[in-house]
Image (cartoon, rainbow, N blue to C red):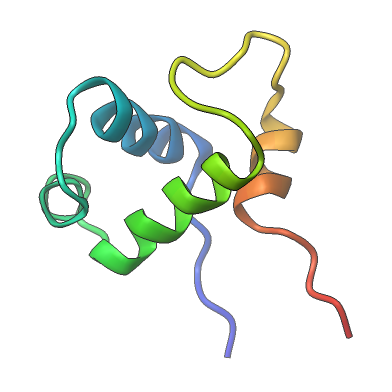
Length: 74
């Protein structure tokens, strides 16, 4: 069963709250109304790709989505 993807605007808000404000995954999850494991996954994927906040201006929405939701290998 596939899960609904989080919108890019919310992903950017999660990253801002995490890196700029230092909120915990649980706090961000409550503020954004998503699960804290999802917050952790998004932040981990972005860090793994070598990015922090603020995101570079040349990082477009398609690339951010690919980072947060990498293609599934079959």
